Amino acid sequence: MHDYDDAVVMCFLKHQGQLFPEEDVASNLEDAEAFLEECMAVVVDSAEEVRDYFEEAGIDMEGADLDEILEADEVFDVGDGRYLIVEG
Image 1 (tube, rainbow, N blue to C red):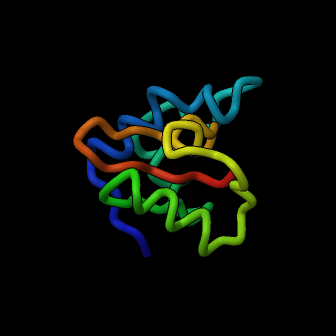
Image 2: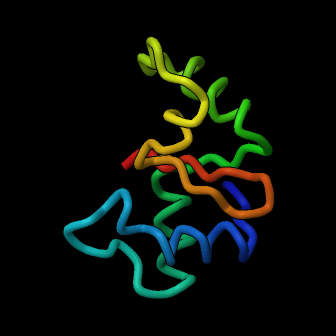
């Protein structure tokens, strides 16, 4: 089980529309945390770790620079140097 702190859960709740523009998947903090747990979202400590995660997952990033990777819909900037990666 993953432990998502309030900053991570609030970030997802606030910005979930970037990954799910049609309809919110969570309406409160508890729903958001349950959703993150269900899809096994990952929190990493730096932009470089986002790139490493995508490389390890085998996601094609040919020619993409770090800024482009961070703009992916499934990457959420928590705001404190950490990033949340949610594979919808």
